[in-house]
Image (cartoon, one colour):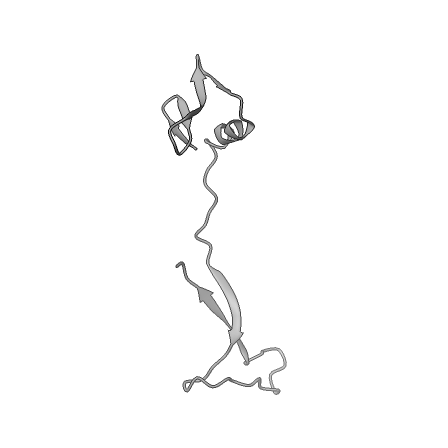
Length: 84
């Protein structure tokens, strides 16, 4: 669905709803929901995701956890997922 002037049309160009004298007229409840959401901002999608992965050294081998530091786990690290 998209808004074209005073009409809401589908992907084929068929009119699904129309504004007449300042009021929207339609039979489809999905079109009414589309109209209500027109003034709302888009949800933020640029959220950076992070995932836990095994830590590796310069050679690519797994790093083991150091038992002398119980509050830090050196075997795991976080990796940032970028947008594709």
